[in-house]
Amino acid sequence: MGYSYRVRILIGLLLLSLLAGCRGDADSPDFTPAPATQTPFAPNADAASTPVIFSDFPGIFILSINEGAYAHLFAYSPIDQPFLRLTSGEWDDISPALSPDGKQIAFASNRSGFWDLYLLEIESGETARLTNTKTYDGAPSWSPDGAWLASETYLDHSLEILIQPISDSGQEAIRLTDNPAADHSPAWAPDGRQVAFVSTRGGDSDIYLADLDDTGSNRFLNLSETPNAIEDHPVWSQDGSHLVWASNSYDNDPSGIFIWDIDKPNIPAAWVGEGDWAVWNQRGDSLLTMVESGKENYLSAYSLEGGLLLQPWPLPGALKGMLWLPDPLPVNLPQNYRNAAVVTPAPLWTSDIPTPESLSVRENLVALDDVQAPYPNLHHSVYASFEALREAIITRAGWDALANLENAFIPLTTALDPGMSDDWLYTGRAFSLNPLIASAGWMVSVRHEIGQQTYWNLYLHAQNQDGSMGMPLHDPVWDLSTRYNLDPATYETGGSFSAIPSGYWVDFTTLAKNYGWQRIPALSNWRNFYRGTRFTAFVQKGGVNWYEAMLDLYPPEILLTPTPVLPPSKTPTPTPIPTGTPRPTNTPRPTSTPLTLVPTSTPLSIFQFATSTP
Image 1 (cartoon, rainbow, N blue to C red):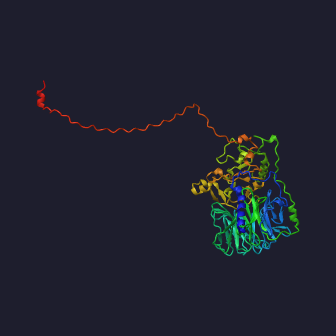
Image 2: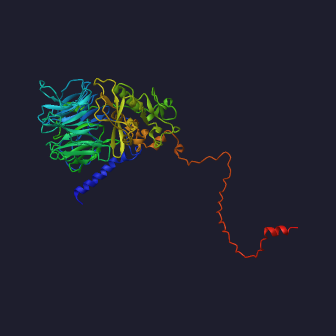
Image 3: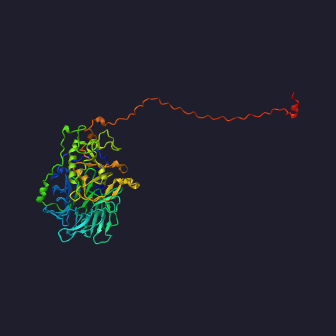
């Protein structure tokens, strides 16, 4: 048995175990969410958690990861660099991009109150501001000569690709795209004459290639052309021979990482492996990937042939960007890195067990203040994180989306829809947002397929639309209401893509995850059963399964399923025994009587009869 065969077997086993949770039932007891008390990152990772590797990894990974309420830049290597925080503060640092000379990192940050582009000098750790506008700027990509940055910018109520000078203030920015659809995530090719990007101009998200030497209508070429998939995160190899991107398919096509060969432009991109994001190493023979499951994200790596190079390792937070440095960090860390590494963020919440006086309805349930719901209560173990999430939403979005819920705790005496007999709402550890928020246009959902299950990413409309809250949407939303437009095809698919709404939006799903709340997958029949979508439902299981959670509220005998017994009728009467219907007998056929000849007298004539009468 060859080495490559053994590696492929190992890949299959690892991916099956990785995706087992998302293919199984969402209520399975093997799920372990964030602890009740948020644990901050430590500068040094536990040696016992170091992932298993199958090849060397020269260089170092730069990851933008959500740490508590905010995302920051971290350095990591599975060989010799534990997690090291490079930036810190009450803001977000996302979308890192490495300069061609390997000396600077461009990234997006809202540290000034608005989204702008910044430059980080790797050697010194010094940060410089590149743009200074109230318009959203993000996802930078360097030109090969290092003089320009292509980025996504919010212009004319949609995302567009803008090319901006870095040091020459006398040159004006160049607008590459001008389309009502969202154009974002640019990737500048190493030859300098092409820019790959993502666009929703076809209805869903596809990878497009812009020819900088062509100013006509044919300058944009659709590379992926997948009508039922969302592509994202295009990245060029160092030599410009290949382009890699991630695809999330809504039909029978595979999801994962795809590679397109520039020398074979008419051949569709080849599937490499599972993943939702990928970046190249310096040699161009390996891909660092992020693999998403329904519970958490994993870091892994593949060879270009799909061989597993890095065992999937759980990330401590949501990923907001990554790159692969060719060289390690300086031996003597700059003071800025050391200052950021020792920062200990405060916990987002603490699970204070309430006093018995504050418990209501039954033991272990806490009443929610100023929350409208049929039963405004939650389990005391999740009450603190719910209130902390509520405050964070008010701060980030400007309004209280949790003040009116479709459901929180539901007693056993209330029957839910079919398929929800063991729903987590019964445990008091889950809540469901009011779907009327979506009907009013203040919330949208983006469909995401993981394994064989459907999940939803929710976004809330920011109260302030000046760029100080949220960011523009990137992915096309999924409109669940179009299933009722009398179109059989739309009904069978459970909805359809909808144009990306304009404005600034807050990522509710990621924010909820920071506070320990996980989304719940849709039921298998969600396409023709609206409530089965469960797109507004979130749960915090706390390391227990559904039955263990129910035992916190109810005695064991209540959870037993009795055999149903039909009640007797009011006046029981014996049921008559049916009698068989006699079969009809055959009617006997008539028999013929034989004729006998009898002599008869000669009839009298009229004259004789008259004379013989006395």
